Amino acid sequence: MSINVSTISGRITKDLELKTTPNGVSVTSFTLAVKGFGESVDFVDVVAWKNLAEIICKKCEKGQVLTVSGRLATRIYKDKNDVIHKITEVIANEIVFGVKAKSSQEHQDSHNHDEQFPDYEELPIDEDLPFE
Image 1 (spheres, one colour):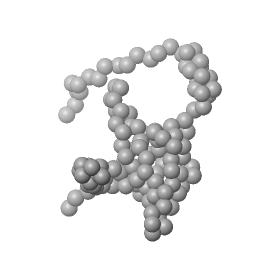
Image 2: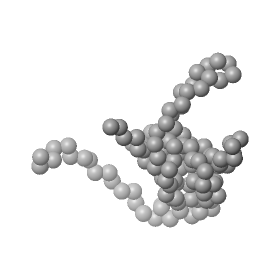
Image 3: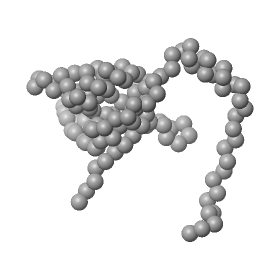
Image 4: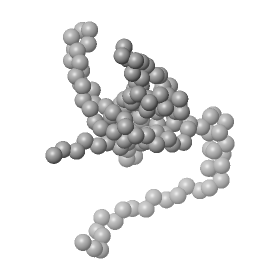
């Protein structure tokens, strides 16, 4: 038995484009910027098909948070220069819409509001927990 399930949440990195295959099937592909620990960011490729692709392209925009659940798929192809490429991407089967990107004015207003409150202090993580 094997399990192939992936759920990621991040911001859409570019404007979305709905394409149609020669057989008339809707598809879109995009990248999510997924924050890691500290300053690290992973850029995860996502593909959505059929009705899900159409919904994503109608309802989402660059900078919006999107949570995607699906399966990991790997494909290999050879480009026009005979260079072999291997791509791993999430094939979406479920999505949850998150907050949309702020306009520049909203961002400025939010930034001014944040300055009214002092920064919080990160608490150290105690590795020696008192239970087993």
